[in-house]
Length: 154
Ligand code: HEC
Ligand code: HEC
Image (tube, rainbow, N blue to C red; front, side):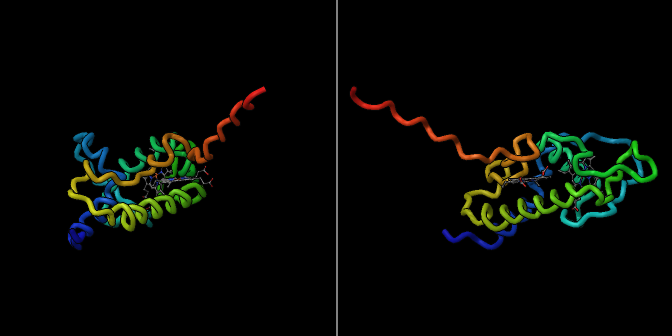
């Protein structure tokens, strides 16, 4: 069966939201407040809300096993606080490239696999955690060679 264009498009949309999808279920009803505005978004789709970005951040944090300040710089006015929109912490731009890479892998390779269903529960997308598994640097060494067999005969 030829993988139809529409499904491909759908899967791309899923690829974009895959990072945030999982936590959506745990959305809490919050007090009525002015919705917070995003100031410096370069990679996430412009349609994403503050809340969605915030939930994606929890995913980043969990996947890398770090705190928010691993990628975010302290505020210039109050060094006890963080300035989430600032790009002063170089890890933030690394994370942006990682996000681009992850989305491209999903869009180009995972979505191109002919899947029977577009159900995100069934189509497995690549997330930060696919590689990181709770560490800022994924463990990527090849397994050690098995020891040579004991000498034969005597
Ligand atoms: C692995 C790195 C990383 C970690 C950890 C991280 N962030 Fe981020 N954060 C980013 C990147 C990258 C962006 C910008 C995304 C873009 O440009 O599309 C961002 C953007 C944001 C923004 C939007 C700022 C704006 O207005 O432009 C907020 C808010 C934010 N992060 C909060 C948090 C919080 C809260 C935590 C901890 C729970 C956190 N982040 C942890 C990398 C990280
Ligand atoms: C295909 C595997 C893979 C995926 C998916 C992936 N990463 Fe990475 N990431 C790596 C590898 C490998 C390194 C280490 C590169 C190095 O040693 O310079 C790394 C390094 C990083 C670093 C720098 C760590 C440091 O302290 O130098 C950040 C931040 C990061 N990744 C964030 C992310 C985020 C956020 C996502 C999801 C949007 C993500 N990564 C998805 C493989 C991946």
